[in-house]
Image 1: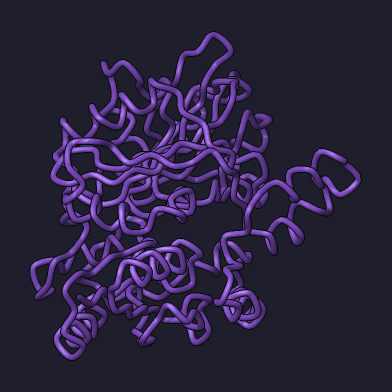
Image 2 (image 1 turned 30 degrees about the vertical axis):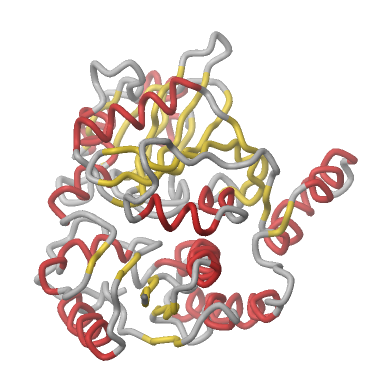
Length: 384
């Protein structure tokens, strides 16, 4: 069996490549970057460089279709935001694909539409409002410190304003094409879930606390947790939507144990690393062959060690707790017998830094500029 995994820049892709290789599959990975980290893993048989999906979605789908046919791919697995472009061209891909059509993914990606979906559920989103004009924003000017503001389409907490000052809030300029969301601020402990669902049935589930992050964005140290309300929410979500593929959610748990869901990511996230020691079982449940039980991870924390040293060390390096956490967690990049991805992080980072300079974006924004989707029509080409 042969799997094609997209998003080779992501540690999640590297994890999936190792998981499939350990399960006896041939593995090909693909991306639009020259030096993505997963390309250099000994788990990978082939690397395919694809065009940028955001620039021309149809050309990307055509290249993907050709790759599936040429390499006789049995399963196509997305890991990053290319999932939306894959959903757009799903019917043109001649193999099994672990995701949903774009029409099903879009309301999950749109933060206000997702918040509305959850109203009335046992775990629901905090009070949320859609902002499409300066007038909408002005309604919150006097109480801005009670709210969180973020673009309806965004990632890595990019541009998110948490309880901003009035002057800072009034600088945002939402439109009907680029709306924002105001969501009531809730204090508490953060949890992130990562799950596999097969036609609405939960087959694997992990939950973790991102103790260290890159700024306010991606977690880089993952402490397994397991609030029962979060698993129940994911099961309800599957029953309500019939969802198929990988899905992740962000939550806040208040001091009294009440959980609120903040947003949805219908793709892979760092939670897949928590299954790194159960490769065959994870492949089985992805394919719906794991029986009635739900696969859960072990309790060992994981981390992205290089990111910890680059982003967390400057803030926490004088803390003994930081070094204890660093020693306790297992790095998701280093693997015995597969050392090249450790070294490949440097050229991969340099390539992203180059894109940040040439495209005049921040580092995190440049890391996904070519694959992110913000609701624009797919039929029209747009610049990354």
